[in-house]
Amino acid sequence: MNRHFVINKYLGKEFLKITIVVTSIFFGLGLLMNLFEEINFFKNLDVSFNTPLKLALLFTPSLLYNFFPFVILISGMLFFLRLKKTDELTAINISGKSNFSLIIIPSILSILLGIFFITSINPIASFMTKKYETIKGVYEEDLNYLAAITQNGIWIREKDLKKNTIIRAASIEGNYLNEVTIYEFDESNDFIRRIEAESADISYLKWNLKNVKTVKSDGTIMRYDIENVFYNSIYDIAKIKTLFSNLDTISFWDINKEIKFLEERGYSSSEMKTKLQKNLSFPLFLLSMLLLSSVFTLGSSFGENKWYHVFITIILSVIIFFFNDFSAALGKTEKLPIAAAIWMPIFILFIFSSIGIIHANQK
Image (tube, rainbow, N blue to C red):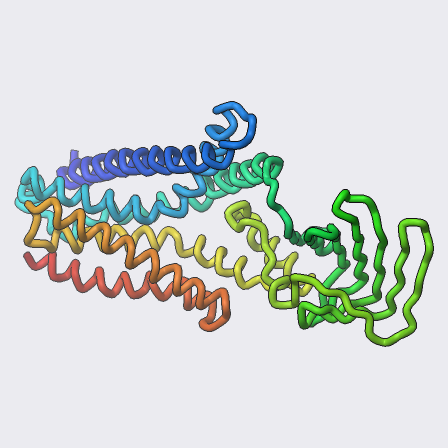
């Protein structure tokens, strides 16, 4: 059997073993933290231990998916450190393989894992997150304000000490909601009146209603001939255009459909487009993290200092997390083109890693 094939097979197997172990640790820690959070949420409710445990199990896969790039970073560092500290790196170098060639197999596996995660794990995690929100929503007591975009239009719920309000609009055009219906209920949820308007200018929190009529609880209908009828809301156009459910409930395979749905109804799709670009860049993001891990291990002269690598891993994770999040925020707010905002951190990591790998390969 070809010697290089045997070495590559060994490298791939060892990298996958370490990745599985690190993934299991992350999953366990995520499950434990979520379990404590759910137990704290249900502390005043009469539920069994199975309920918070079930919710924690449903939510953890989504958390793991979002933090998997750091799983690869840590796995890569542990993998390359192991090769150095067991002198396997020296033996492999003697066999004719350079430091650069050692990175190829883990790099290929990182890309394949990224593709597997966005095409298979992501849809499963999205389904479980949606299930999580459905179950937990039953126990939410503090949903005073709620808004959702559905096939039937936009729905808004508002609540204060005096009344509860449900608002429905068929569509949105510019700064206007069309075919608006406002249902008002008292604090006991008894119907007070229904307000119907042809449109509502929602440029401000004080909505300007057009062609208004009201229907009271006794059936009395009142029409308003005056030009301006106002309704005070907690939502304006800026808030409504950024209304989304938890994006983690949207599967990779459904993102394009959601973008089309939002744009057809005039809603902002910037967050959904950001999510799409994040998913498309996910395999290369994993690759960049793997390359970065090689820079701080193969290219480091502190190979025997464990605390150095622990410190470097923590600092890198924090910096990358905030840089990536900040860049994505620039895309969502349209300060930068969405594609540029998502791909820029990866491009920078590639440049930095490439320089470091060239240096390490010369050692």
